[in-house]
Each structure stands twice: as structure tokens, then as C-alpha cells.
Picture 1: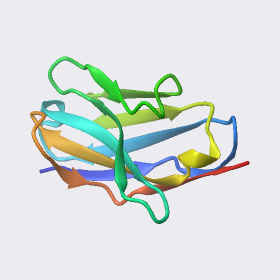
Picture 2: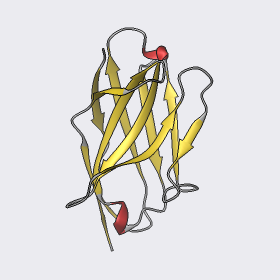
Picture 3: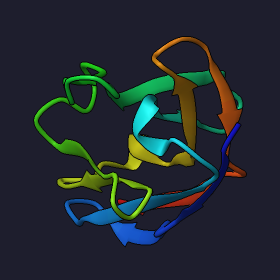
Picture 4: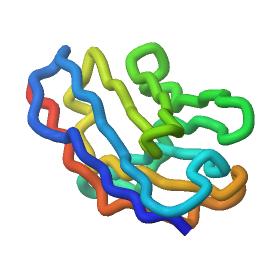
Length: 118
């Protein structure tokens, strides 16, 4: 089990950028695939991006492909989400999640708010 704390959210104008961070505590961070999810007001939680624990492969939702970049620094037990060319529809609470050896996302952070103004 890992504990996750997100940071880096805030208010930004459309076209701007933010970088989210997710710091993990606990052992064996390198054995966890890490994901970012988001939930907009009145909508369900949706997948944004993930990065595999074994080979570092990355995956993106079509809605963010080409604008967002996920990365991880296992030495710092941290995963990042660089978000560029932000749109008002990116407004949501962003959650970090961990999946041990790529199985289920069982560990979640508390979320960080991202608001993009038009």
C-alpha cells in the first residue's frame, strides 16, 4: 500500500500550463503503475493517463493526447502530469492512483483542483 498526495493544481487561463505532482510514501514505488484520473462537476471519474511500472510505457485518453505528458521519478517516489494547452473542459479534480504491478488501482490520493478559465 502507498499513500499518495497530489499538488500543483490551481486556476489557469485557457492555453496555459500546469504541472501536477503526486508524491508517494511507502515501499516499492517502482513496482507500481501510476495513473492520473479526473472528475469534472456532475460527471464520473475518467482516465487521463498512466505509466507502467515495468517498462515505462505511457497511455493517454484521446482528449489529452498531445497536450499532457506523464512521467515518473522513482528516486523521488513521484509521478508528474505536465498539462499544456489547457482547455476549459479540462477543469476537474485530478486524482493520482497506484496499481501494484499494474493490477487494480487500489490506492488513491485526495485530489487536486484544476480550473481552466476561458
